[in-house]
Length: 485
Ligand SMILES: NC(=O)C1=CN([C@@H]2O[C@H](COP(=O)(O)OP(=O)(O)OC[C@H]3O[C@@H](n4cnc5c(N)ncnc54)[C@H](OP(=O)(O)O)[C@@H]3O)[C@@H](O)[C@H]2O)C=CC1
Ligand SMILES: O=C(O)CCCC(=O)O
Image 1 (cartoon, rainbow, N blue to C red):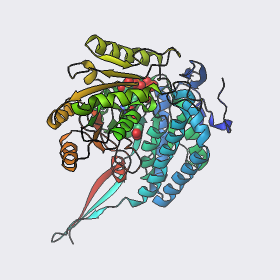
Image 2: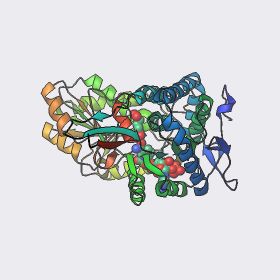
Image 3: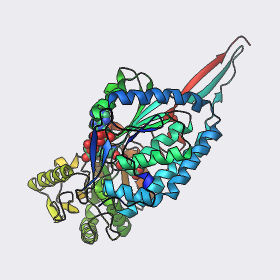
Image 4: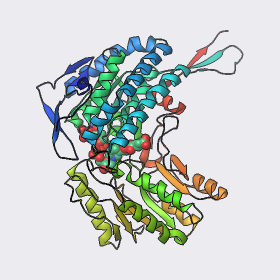
């Protein structure tokens, strides 16, 4: 079924380079698939390394004038872009659900979440302050902040809008230009954002969108081109490591938002209903496809059985289906391959002794759907304990003591989000300080917003997105020494 939009001008299929909507160099295209139906939604231009270089050169040129503008003028443009996104929320949500699969209510929420970064950084970009250091006898020392330069961004399919605005808003706010490669699964949301940016008055070249079926070529140019001073990436840890290696030759700065293995630690003294609700939304949001999704639900022995009973009863009530249908609570996963990957993880756990309480199979609804699954009798020696599941599968582990819970939480190379449910104030502090994560939700799993520093430690990445700290990723610190005074 063709996508029905109120404003058909938001459905773009060409890439956006230097303010022009362009086809791939030799007319190459790639398909965008609706994962709920398997239908082709569009054929989108596939750009090459040569076109990537053109976009980078255009960004360098555009940035010269952009960085010289008063911050207030840059802010005005971001505000206009924000307003246009709000005006077109429903169309952007329809596009997102069609290409990504998440239910419409989640897409509408993501569009608002994505827009919030433009608003936030429109304001925050006006507050890039320097410093005057304590004077010494004959000299004065000053610190100024300057835009890092042309930024290349590579974004994933799980948040086709917000992962882009979270990067482009701070970059543009402080005077950088950006070239973006969105995920091949979800280019339509990225192109619609560019269209609205153009309507808001983006100067040509300041923000290009490089849709492609050849991530290696485009990513290769982005990471080797000396004009690019920074690469910001959200996606898998494997690709993040590869990009970091590629960036080493030209010593680019990097921000990496990579995989997670989030524990939800639920103590005996927790409010059980709150813990069940928090774990459910964290685990099954976007059908389990976020890097901060609950990956290991860890419940203290005293309330384990009660938790499992309430949690799985709630899962049984989910309405799985096409995200474009309003009644749907949970949509498909992104590809047929993802269904296979998820099922292998479940099968391996079951072969090692796990018990399926709910689901446990690819869904009869179609080849992109997996049944929401609950597993018990899972133990930390199973591969599931270490792996990012990225699907609607909840393994519920049992622990006895606080020390054991902290040890289990830290027994992973990842360190992005974590969650703790307890009503003991001392324990809140001990656990929050003892676990090695960039973010800790205490009696709360919906922790993301534009005002907080989102990011991880260990192999979950480096850098922070959103908040006042999010500007630092796009700024250089320059020291100026005034001597002979
Ligand atoms: N931290 C997070 O939010 C995310 C984590 N993941 C994790 O990664 C797993 C695999 O998902 P997947 O989509 O394959 O994630 P990837 O890391 O492969 O994709 C993320 C982005 O990186 C691009 N990319 C992939 N390979 C290269 C490369 N060699 N050079 C430059 N860019 C590249 C992709 O492009 P293209 O789409 O064209 O391949 C996409 O734009 C998931 O199951 C999940 O575990 C996935 C997405 C988001
Ligand atoms: O999965 C991600 O990459 C980001 C999670 C979305 C968010 O909560 O910001």
